[in-house]
Amino acid sequence: MRKIYFVFLVIVSACINKNEVAPPDVVSPVPTQVQLDWQEKELFAFIHFTVNTFTDKEWGYGDEDPNVFNPVDFDPEQWVKTLKEAGFKGAILTAKHHDGFCLWPSEFTDHSVKNINWQNGNGDVVGELKKACDRNDLEFGIYLSPWDRNHAEYGRPAYVEYYQNQLNELLDNYGPIFEIWFDGANGGDGYYGGARETRKIDDQVYYKWDETFKIVKEHNANTLIRGDARNSLTESRWCGNEQGYIGETNWNMVNPDTLLAMGKKRIKVLNTGDINGNVWMPAEVDVSIRHGWFYHASEDTLVKTPDQLYDIYLNSVGRGAPLLLNVTPDRRGLIPEQDIASLKGWKEKIDKTFATNLAAGAKIEVDSYRGNSDNFDASKLTDGNKETYWATNDDVKTGTISVTFEKPTRVNYVLIQEYLKLGQRVKSFSVDVFKNGEWQQVAQGTTIGLKRIVKMEPVETEQIRLRINDSRACPVISNVEVY
Image 1 (cartoon, rainbow, N blue to C red):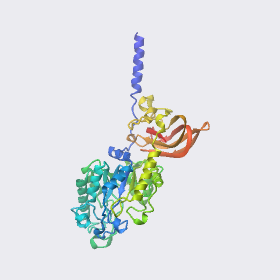
Image 2 (image 1 turned 135 degrees about the vertical axis):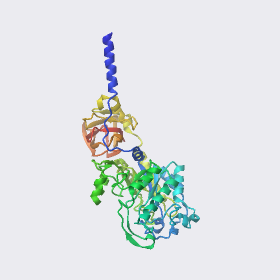
Image 3 (image 1 turned 120 degrees about the vertical axis):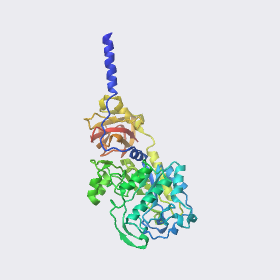
């Protein structure tokens, strides 16, 4: 009897120990919850709208007659419903572009909607769009250009006080906002209150970024700051281009001090990130649905097609970076019909492609898992829970995940996600299919991050395999899907 009892205790103890295997240690840096929540939303819309819409310019000089701003059919509800139907989770409005004209009735300047004929000086683009976003459960964000080609004091200390006053005003009156966008275009020629001259500033010092960012966080700690990657307080970086792609290698980390010393050479690192970076600063891919950022009638035939937008999606969201797609209202104050049609076609293509996850009903196997614990086994790859994950032992930096279907199945995409709360890890991976009695490699890549969508030539197979070839530490994969 004692022997049976002893064996029972050994079995129970083994089961308990099996399920009490410690999770992997964190590989720093890691995202804050604000950053992770923002990254997981994936799709945001930029809305460029100001006097430039009516002057046919991209950058206003600052001397434009503000009365040219006259969107007679202004309908932010149409904007928001269009964006919601296209799958966007938030919208960021150019509350003030480089020309200095303010789309809200600012108490700190006369150069705003409060002093124009449109709506008898009672218009408020920022306020109306914020209300429309709230009504339709779309998050609202603000772009506030640091450069102001209209303001007489730009380049002097008084302008920074003005800029911070406006920042406080916007955050007080139109918050909460999910993201604030600080542009990198700074200093140069402008109207500057009639001076009509060139003014240069040190963009790392002049704007008092640490102080300015503090204002944002004092209003709402959950507002994400998109700013200059050379400042360690920035929470999201520029992707290094405006063409709609992040690097095939995309680390979420950078080293701001290194970028500061690199000058213009930093553009490449902004696109790839830095495996040795000491600050978590994920890239955001910003690109326009048209050639320019503001509406131009001459570009009505140049709207990106659904297929072009889909390629952008794969090269941004599909490489682990949120996509900020610019969708610009026209002079009526409406998103143009051809742009809407392109967005609808794009959304339909995404929905159709990723409608049925073939891995959900397949057999999932791995070559090893952490401590042989159920907490880290293959089932965690397809359980639909983003807080669970497959992991290997600490000394194992490679691994194989196999997906076996009940019958030959046509596959075209593999979607992979890392558990980023423990840090970004994977440095290299490959995808194989079992065909003609042998494994054949059909794709390979470097980083995974939040989400990696691997597109390959369509192939019919009974089995597909993901190989983690190298990793900074033991791989930690939270999700695998096949389409």
